[in-house]
Image (cartoon, rainbow, N blue to C red):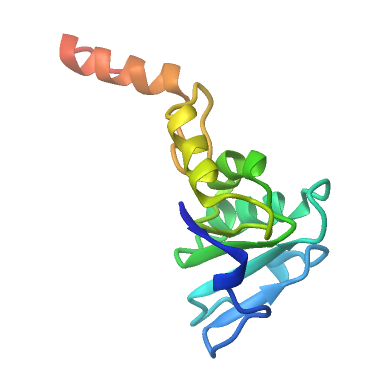
Length: 137
């Protein structure tokens, strides 16, 4: 995941192929043709609706462009953001980039499936075991 310091990000989406979606908008109602980046806002860290929006964009709508988290983005949210489909996050001003990067080192893999790795770990493991034994999974 690309981490961006607050001072390095201009507020508001700019550019023809970038849109900013309020956290109360259903992404399924939007035309995403030609869009390369979508900024999803966390107005406060306790409001997680942007997680659902990112998941919808990736899994249900098949959006392949960048999904960027903006707003009240804390280090504690980053791993879940990545698992939900975010590619980039603009950290709140008081958050440290080095500490943020360590979160990904701390949690390198997960048992459950997510938007990045759709199959759960136990199914993925079973498929590779069956392949090596010559058995259909």
